[in-house]
Length: 388
Image 1 (tube, rainbow, N blue to C red):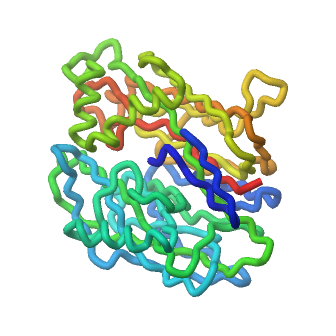
Image 2 (tube, rainbow, N blue to C red):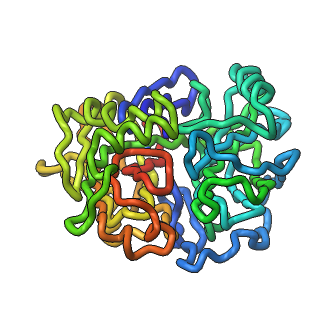
Image 3 (tube, rainbow, N blue to C red):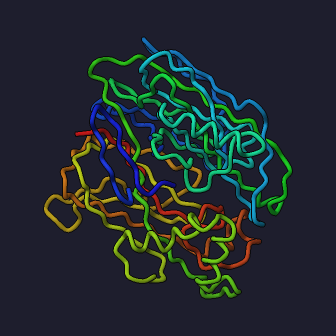
């Protein structure tokens, strides 16, 4: 997951937000311009739901991965992130007003992110695709490109994300769409077994002269979760766990735990259930909606604006996190942030859940840090934004 995001919401707009990271909940709000379908159930209901009717000016673009892919996690792991490159054949400048990712094989799909790739990087995306055998290319962390836009995040059971009003994610002639699918093969101990042929259905409109272009900014925080009191084992040592993450995901992504400590102003790891990251906003932006992303051990997540001041405001508060219900939370009205405002991300994880969850109860105890695997963790606040 990207740690530095470039916001491209209009001509000559380039806002770089450091350590900044969306699903929307069912209560549509005309002020924010975003409407979200009902939150997914805990039972992993199928996301292959009938499409809601097209609205005036919209058309559907349905993109399917050309060939089915059988995940093969590298380096003895049980997780693979695969980027599938698709061509929406944009006829001109258009806006995405709805996204519905559909995994053909949901039991092995942990989550997925849809990106729109700027035309100037289309060749780089195709080169990555061609250089990696099989459909798509391996892409831990993010899509490996510098000028793509994070459009939507899917978890099993999620339905279509809809944007209402004169807003949307911009797509230009020559743009590509990348589906980054996180495949989880815990049930087969990482052995290749089943294939998947994912697809995505886009709602596309030409927009107007006043259409507000959206972007998604990720705000990431550290995880320093020690083994529970009744647990022991070699991976309960941070150094051993850190080395294991690097082995499975490579030096760059495997080193994210230490990188996040530096970016969040922590001089050393402080083991504990709750971790925070506080950053300053470098340029004005408007926030329309928020969402939190963690893995199986996530307990709660919160994003606050200007905490401890008279201007304090809670932008996201999920006191009981549910991996199967990572809904996008609409703000009552868009919130304008000015340069120098403070954003604070707080995540709480619970190591005792490891022995209570069927997916994790047979995995070895470990000191949990940031990692791309299902047995690792993340602490991410996703902000749906536009330029102020």
